[in-house]
Image (cartoon, rainbow, N blue to C red):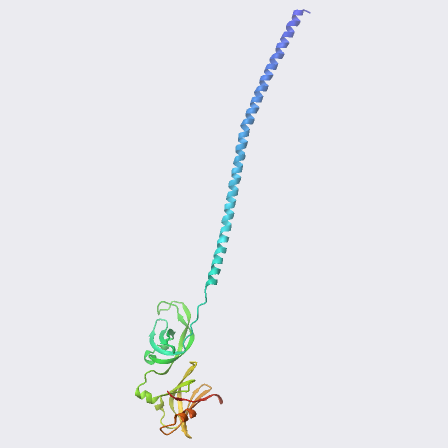
Length: 297
């Protein structure tokens, strides 16, 4: 074999191997650069994505906290309002109930839209403005007179005028007002009435002229008040005089009120009058009160 031919063949193979190595190195370098670039490009994207996820999670947590706070705040406000209302109710002091007078001197009687209005002063001089039923509105009967009062719960219109509006309310009104005696009696009235007292009971007997002198007749009035201001007024008293005394009796249901007064020649002995003048109260036939010591006042 020709030596030159072998030498050329080996040289060609060497060149081929060298070229292959150069091309392979270039390819490896190119792949390495591409991989590095891809990695470098991917890492920022991953960081950015991670930041985005963290930000989204933070926003979600903030929103959830806000919603929880909104849900919690109304309950807190309701509890706070409830506590405030309870404190307000606790702080409210009961109103002092004023005792209504049982008697007094009438100063004014005016008819209103829903009731009658009575102004009077009680025995202590205190002024009272009271409501009454419409049948009490008789100024000519009660004005400037001392009266006894009875109260009752009545239904009145809860309207701004006398016209019905479909609303009503309960009011404690004067349902009965009875004259005890005139404050300034005339001369004829003075002779027609008499007031006696023993310190515990004060009694005024009126309309004495209604008795003609015939036993068991007359229409005398009876107005009595205790020291505790318990008062009672009656009519229809009948007089019977015998055995040195005159007896006037009034009936009130099952109760009988009898006033016994001695018949004495003038001038009468005051002490004898006080001792013999008696007030006797019976329930049916049972005596429940028997007092004396009365004198004129």
